[in-house]
Image 1 (cartoon, rainbow, N blue to C red):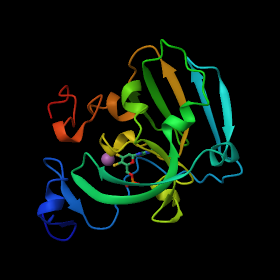
Image 2 (image 1 turned 45 degrees about the horizontal axis):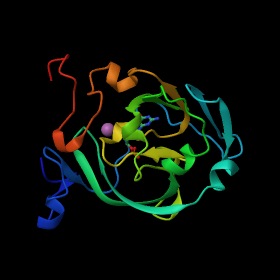
Image 3 (image 1 turned 135 degrees about the horizontal axis):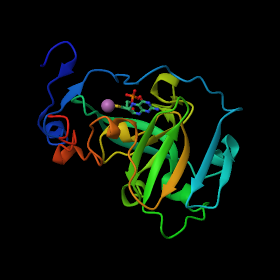
Image 4 (image 1 turned 180 degrees about the vertical axis):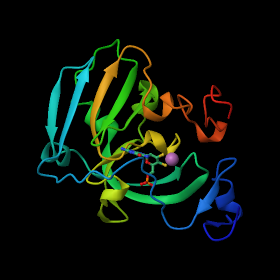
Length: 201
Ligand SMILES: Nc1nc2c(c(=O)[nH]1)N[C@H]1C(S)=C(S)[C@@H](COP(=O)(O)O)O[C@H]1N2
Ligand SMILES: [Mo]
C-alpha cells in the first residue's frame, strides 16, 4: 500500500516504525465526529472520581513548566508519523497538583465533543506523556486537538485525546469509546495490540 499516501522509511527510520505500520506523508487528521471549537478563554479542565475534585483554567496550565517534545505517532489504522514536534506540559507535573486517592489504578480521559478513552494509571503517569498546545511551533490547530490535547507516545494514538477536558480516576478498568467498539484495551503498537478480538479482527 505504498504510493500516494505512504512513503518508504529509510533504514534507520524503519527500525522506529512498528510492525504493520507505514509512514504517512504529512500529518493526517483522524477524528470521529465533528471538530469542537473551544477558545482558551472558555477552556476548562476537570478532575473527578478518586481524586479531590478540581477545575483548572488555561492559565493554571500555562503556569506549569513548558517543554518541547519530539515523539513518534502511531495510528491503529496503520499510519505512523515520526519526529512530531510539540510544546506542552508533562502529565507528571500536572499530576503533582492533584490529590489522587491510592485506590485509583485507572483513568478515563474525557474530551470536548464527548470522546473518551481509558488508560491504566501506570501508562498515564509516564514521564514522556504530555498535554500539547503547540504543534511544530504553532498553536495546536483545532483539527489536531487544539487548544489542548494529550499525547501518549508509547501507545496507539487513539489514547492521545484531542480537546481533552477531564480526567476521571477509577478503581478498576472501564472502557472508552473505541475500546467499547472493539479496540484493544491497552493498544501497544510494538505488540500490535490493535483490536480486542471479540469482533473477529
Ligand atoms: N477527542 C478525540 N480525540 C482523538 C480522536 C477523536 O476522534 N476524538 N481520534 C484519535 C485517533 S484514532 C487518532 S489516530 C489521533 C489522531 O490525531 P490527529 O488527528 O492529530 O492525527 O487522535 C486520537 N484522539
Ligand atoms: Mo487512530
